[in-house]
Every structure is written in C-alpha cells, then in structure tokens.
Amino acid sequence: MRLRISDYNSQPNLEAVVLKIWRLMLNVQYEEVLMELIQFPSKLPLDFECYQCLLPLFQQALGIYYYSDYYVAREEVYRSNKVYFARFIYDLISMFGLHLFYIEPLTLELLLRRVYQAVTHNFETGKVQLRRVEDVRPAFTEEEFV
Image (tube, rainbow, N blue to C red):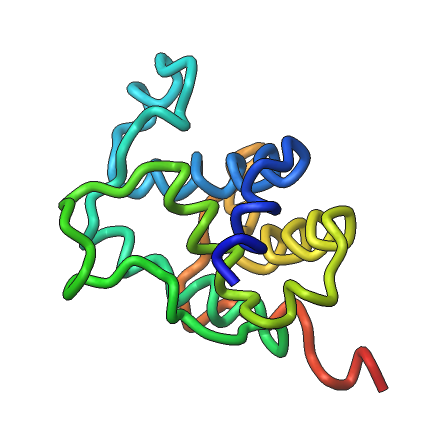
C-alpha cells in the first residue's frame, strides 16, 4: 500500500492541486502578509496540532472515497511537532486507502479537485478560505454512482 501511495506522491499534476489546499491550510497558522512574501509555500511547516484539527475536513470531503486514516500522521507515532507539504500529500492520498488500486493518476487529480471545491469557499471577492468541518459536504456520495 505504501508503494502505491508513493507512486501517486510523485505526480506533478497532483502536487499542484494539493499545493492549493496546502496554501489555505498555512493561512490558518500564518499571517496573510507572510504568505504573500513566501515564494515556496511547500517549504513552510504547519504546526502538528493545527494539522490534526484540519484533517477531518478531508475525511468529510472524501465522502465514500474515504477509506482509512491508518497511514496518516498521528500524535502517538509522529515524532515531530511540525508537518511539511510532502507529508500532507502522503496523508491526503493515503486516505483513499484501497481505492487507490482502482484509481488512475488522472482520475485522482480530478477527485482531488472535487475535494478542493468541497473544503473551500469564496468568502470575499477573490478570497478563498477553508470551510469549517461542519460546513463541508462530501464531494462524493453513493447517489452519484447509482
């Protein structure tokens, strides 16, 4: 399973979509002014506690595609108090679990774009932010596939 997750981890198209989500996650912790100055947001870490609070957004948004958080960083086993972009990509893709064996990279990119739509909202003109967990609707439901 870990090898399958790693295969997807190196896809540039997926990385671009996940980076958009990562920027919004960083906005929760960092000032907007700092975010505008940073050229490579993928180099900025996110506090582990903040990260743990944001993960339920994605579990909710994945809907029927959410399989497990078995490979996701947990407090008991994760030794750092900071999470970096590479770990977030791994965690987000790992939430698909065994579904990954049936999903092609291009399809996964489309699924992640739908997740992005589900967890974000344009609150002000041109200002996209993350929703609260209770406001996130699953991007994928059984009714869509019937």
